[in-house]
Image (cartoon, rainbow, N blue to C red; front, side, top):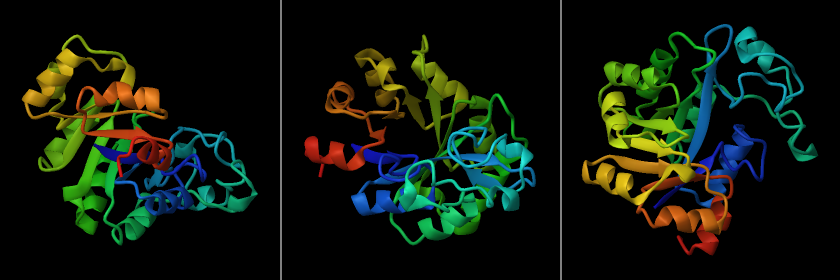
Length: 240
């Protein structure tokens, strides 16, 4: 079972920043999960929320700022003083660092309720530029984005995110042409997990942060988890 650091090592550094991603590498995780949106000038940047109020010294929506304007806000001070002057990373900035590692990568496209027209093309272009398509999964709760990704590059792996249990999870995988299902861990059960695995569909569950949750999902033989505590779970579960 693979371990992805959710928004980087967000328990030890401000989420979705270069410090969090670099910390995840040091902790020995298999991969990084991050979130991508578009700036006012159409540049993919890494941030979970549509607004920057929670994780920066700024206020308002990402879509209303250029990258240059966003770089003027502090994205680390809210976490603690060690990370003062941490900047929001662009996806390009991250990928320049990422290509020097052997990490896996999950990029979540944050479409909905704000829809970023053209975000799929921009993400695919950057992945092609850096030649890392073979170790990336693109996921989204906004499933039309997954179909668009497959049209742009049918060889890219995609993951359909969902929170509640669909009536037919395997049908969801078919409808979205997804290579993986990415359920909230509560939504897992033996029957559908066995079915989708038998059809060659992978299962990567979110967000598992303690041993009770990990023991629950392990019984279904899932392929990967997303966690805020990668080192803690690897140690306690003897995964490494």
